[in-house]
Length: 81
Image (tube, rainbow, N blue to C red; front, side, top):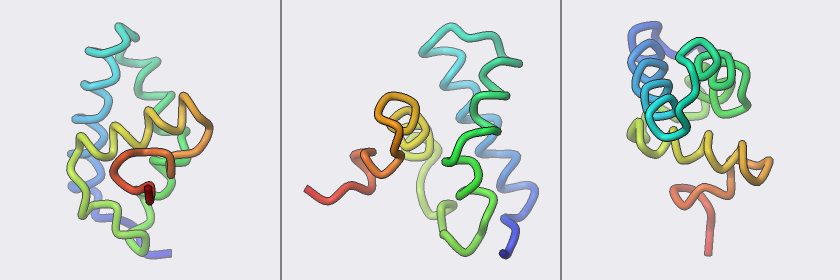
């Protein structure tokens, strides 16, 4: 596994956690825990998946799809319709 560069991961972490707290009114610590323990974040950590080619909005949408449906592949950014 090739790790995503720390500064890129930090950028996504901050942006997605901010979106979670704003949309759901979750405390920042809880939002951080929920994002960092998600499958979406695991894939983001692995540079081989190329998740950093997506915008922070797309990563948030993948996380949200994972939370709602149980599968981040249900995100409008990656599903095939």
